[in-house]
Image (cartoon, rainbow, N blue to C red; front, top):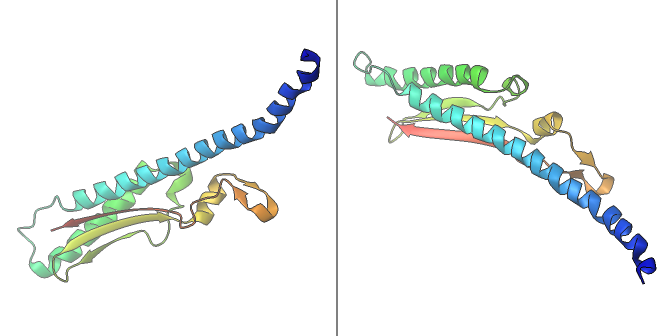
Length: 150
């Protein structure tokens, strides 16, 4: 009876092994992507909070928003240079910036973004032709944003 099931284990292994490897690879791929997003979120949070630590006594209301925006932008640029790995420093998008909205309540907002094409360029994926790439990069890329009212 054992003679009939000799190749069954080898067949099951050959059938399931590629799926197990694919699942492990996808888990590693997304852990790297989410690690990058976590780092980016930490940087924008720090840039916004550090921009608000300043002496406001010497500034009038018209200069305050501009000064805080400039300070947040400088801190974000410095944090990106010191807080991201070398492979990511120049990869965060051009839409990464700090802004101030002073319409009703003055709010400083910083954003970092990385599009999906950049992620695909940094992390290898396997192309299956008509089926697409595996694992797929997040279609909208990754971004991090932080806001604080002042």
